[in-house]
Length: 451
Image 1 (cartoon, rainbow, N blue to C red):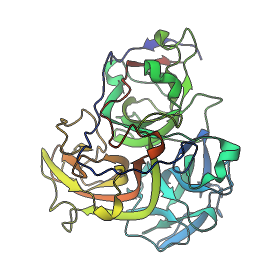
Image 2: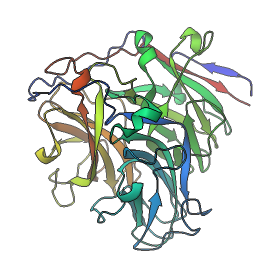
Image 3: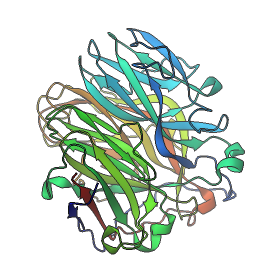
Image 4: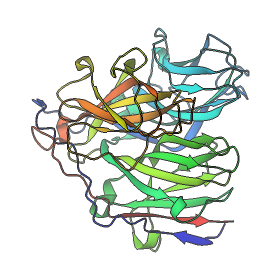
């Protein structure tokens, strides 16, 4: 398809994004060799489907029934190593449930946790990003609470659990978190038509060579009919996977880990070497994208690595856990992370955050507490009245080990489950305390193929 129109320079010249001042956190870090790969991230070249109950991929064909679970082999499939995986990053999709319910994906061989991965109503179609610790024999378990539902799972990457992956896969990437920052909003340029496939990019200038992937919150806004978005590196043909699954007329976000490729000379509005990735939408829709993190080449100063945990609930406002009560309109709550989950180097909680039955259309936003930051112009959840809806969230901690969560309209309960933590790796730390600088976003843009 040819390029019929261009949407370029969403306009972030010279923007430096501030980081948390973490000087109050004790940080007696012990030096570690920079060659270690434990906790580093390895993106799939293209996301790969490892479960589809509709076709019998990964399990016998058929919906998962009430109170039932399936054990899914993950390690050793679709190019994943057979050993050495600590956790996998998955996109979990529910299709055609016969009742309101939830699905929990958790380490194989462990007891069912008090946590959920994706919550849904009868007949719902939707997806959620999930980072899941691998359990016994490299498996995860997939549990459905009520009714029957089809479940589809695409794997987008993994975190190293030990050094054994180094020989075949080399050095993985570290994560740099960013204050949520809007880099694309097609509502300012024009709707993306059904079948539209287009490139997008972010320019970090001198830092571009170190960027291997992006962590984005991708939102479909008011699609004309049910469908899906796929986001991938653009390397090779579009994969048989989905990033965001949406119903007509809804606002549906999902966290997305995306491998990038450098912009070739003459493309990306002249931003040669910028981090480029690619979109596809099956139905006509607007798309909004917020940058929340970058995956580097494993060498950048103050890069973070990941420690997986079994799902642990830290917030349930329905019972006064983490937040004393439901959040009302324009109310911001503060959540302090339980000390048992933290070390002196912990910076970010990997969470699944769920809005429970809001009384109005609303926006949920999470950002670090006690830093002087204003609420970002970004969203983590966009639930409709009465919905129970989840999304993956990077819960960046402020100097008092806390984050803020804001509710825009109506009243809603919130639930948050922690699935792991990101910590500053001593081998690439700038010193005894984390610096406040970050590589600046110089610009971003997209160019749309219309047919």
